[in-house]
Length: 411
Image (tube, rainbow, N blue to C red; front, side, top):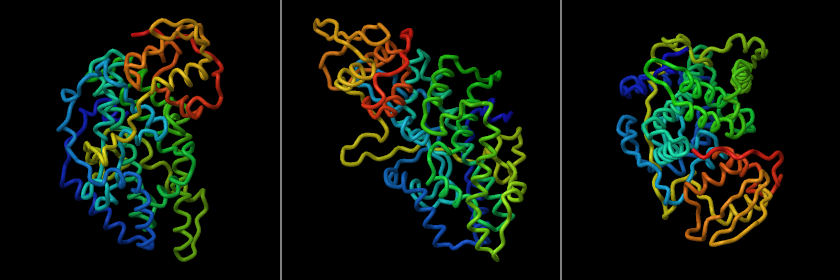
């Protein structure tokens, strides 16, 4: 198993000369491709549209300039704001994203490429994980950043592997592939499944230098398992070889139009598969044998990115939970709750026999401890709550739930 998965040591410092070398290598390969430049640029703009809108004026910092000592723990009396709802909708790109070296001169982060941790989102996830598991901020920081780093590093691996293929064939591969997959259902984004599998591997593989607490392993496993579409397939260990084969097929399929434009030649899927095989689609042993020295994994730069606040809007993906939603929809509809008594609070008996106290209208939204207490009594994890919220279209379809779940212990 790759040493980066066992002990990354943990994220290498950015190497500007190596980063520039990869950009120049990419441009040299692009100049030799049989592809209409304008069409390729249109595809590029489409791929970056999501982050270009919200992150065009973002602040960029090197990874080592921000650490766990800068993160404040959750105050139980503050309003609960969670990133988990964003993950349940958009997958791990709500936390971080990979920007190809091919797009270095495009927004976001114009002039830079690599892995970008979205600082306010990652910070909030670390605080949530520490609060729910009882572990320290430092332990949550290391577990989460390891998982996210290796997840995004796999996206670089695929990009670099496509570049190697393009240098041999002179046919565009990566941009057509990304454009093609972006139009498909999230359930067939196999690259995300494999990326999450390797991300979990980064916290599950024990080494002398790093041991992840079991409660954080469980928390992050649950986070992956309740992610949307193929992101959730990262927990399916036995299916990973099949996902890699399906990913190779997608890269091949996206190349067909280019093949048809070059001298009217056509190669059969089986021959293309032989040419591509699975080069670069596995995390290789130390030394990265599937990548040339210029494209080694350690040369992928890593940054923190902070999106600007616009017109008073808060950080994207952070979601609050309103007391009214909990009482009138989640408890009453999803949990089939019935009011059993009332003092200065309302008390509901839910489907598993547990009794839930509804907070007073001291504020519009729940506090962190209130949210944790309610979902634990419902037998849910935080990630499962937001996954079910999405599945039921905010507790309006497929309710009440079936089956019920036993309450969880409050830690």
